[in-house]
Amino acid sequence: MERTSVKDGATIAIFDDVAFMRQLIRSKFRTYGFDVLGFNDGLFVRPDRARCDISLFVVDVNMRHGGIKLVKRLKKDAKYARSAFCVISSCNQPETRADAEEAGCDLFLTKPLNWEALEAFLVERGLIQ
Image (cartoon, rainbow, N blue to C red; front, side):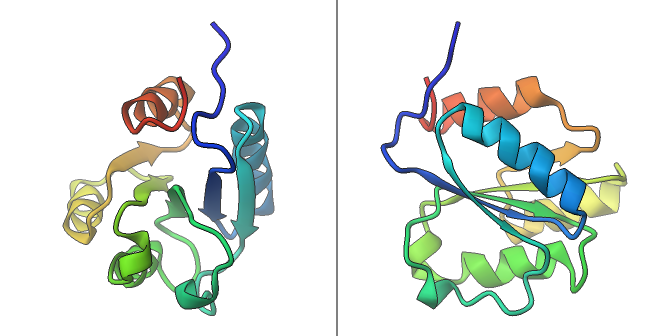
């Protein structure tokens, strides 16, 4: 079954310091019809200056300046109260998962990404059908 974006103009923001990973994830989300923003660093991102609503943040735990720190900062902004947060990591350590859960992440995926789990999450959140 072909899945499509439910939310018209839904935007996904990807934070990963590896260009290949950003491109891979961007390509997958674009097949659903999402607008996709890609960032190699979250240090200078100003959520209050975003020109669009972000439906989902995909954040690499191990990127420069810390992905979990970025999630915590974004979660404090009321503008993103309804946004979903997915963190991705190259390691599957219990403490990393615990840090992500404590930060308020909705989904934790390890690399290589499990696309079926990600798709199920998007369906669950009502972003695709």
